[in-house]
Length: 188
Image 1 (cartoon, rainbow, N blue to C red):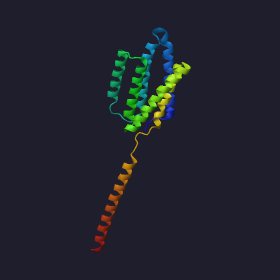
Image 2 (cartoon, rainbow, N blue to C red):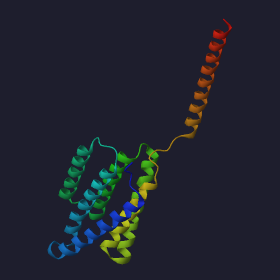
Image 3 (cartoon, rainbow, N blue to C red):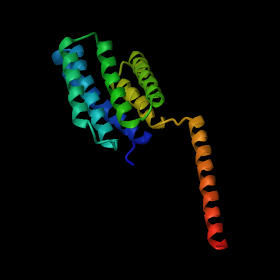
Image 4 (spheres, rainbow, N blue to C red):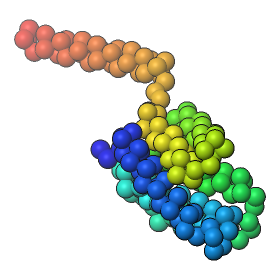
């Protein structure tokens, strides 16, 4: 299985943090911080989505997902909402893609939403304390790497116990029928 590990997430966080800080440092004097952030946020989200696709066993819908994500990114860039909303929309898109490609239930997806909210909080904390784009980006993707600890599905124990009990009853009935058939064969 290609499911990523936390170590993969740490490496991706460092790489994306390095590229984000390099691009922001290079382009900010020319076009300003706001414009650079509006380019870096979707670029990082796109790179992270490609990483998620490379780690997912699910093959169906990738082109559609990338097309819809690209349309969303283009519309958000064109509309130009405030920067916090712009960031939250891209984080929501990452959460939605991860929920579709890595989980098969509502509870794991909601747990992942909590990880996404925690990653935004870590980013705000890191940028307010250090002012470093690298640390803010690294903290964001480092917390995002915790999604590997969320189980793909959470099974209902009551349903499982009921199914097991009915399976045992069916097995016992079949065994009794087989024993009866064998008894009839040998007594004739």
